[in-house]
Length: 237
Image (cartoon, rainbow, N blue to C red):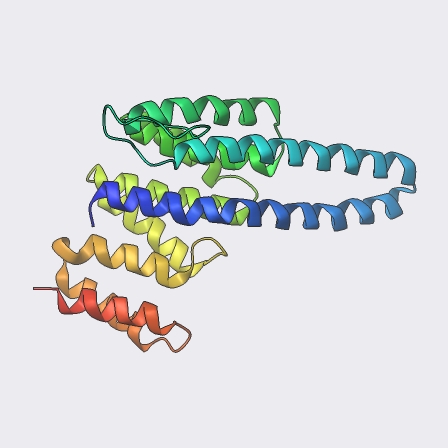
């Protein structure tokens, strides 16, 4: 699988997870705030603070969604008229630049929100499309160290892919193994295993086969995952 194909797959999978992650964060924050109100005995101030933060999360999420819509919009061949009311771009670089403006606004205007952290993750993906590997790495590292383990896992997976593309396989392998040992809602164990096995396909086919075999023998994996692993294993030389 080429880097561009992996990149598009990450966009499709991770964009779908964005709202789910934000909803989980909001619910978690609700419980945390309620407990704080009781312990601190400042109900009015606590409730006010919660609604203020919830409103910021909603506003940040809406703006982030606009950026994701731009970033995942299909590229049009040069000369093709754009659809009315729809974002249209003829190059990945131009599309990434336009979306980055939204992501920067979210990350700077709505600090200390989950949407802000996700915006930085997408800024890393956008930087890759603009061929700025250094900036992409910086964004991914920032998000990888965030407190939300689901968002951090996305960044670690993207960082591992970036390292592999740059020939830093030792760093990529370390991150994939970490994701395998600590799976999350956004990066499951078989997903990380598949990525690691793919890395080994040309580097060490025997190791790739070993990982694919582990996937096929794991009863917790779906039939689809096992089928993909078998197909990849059959293609090994």
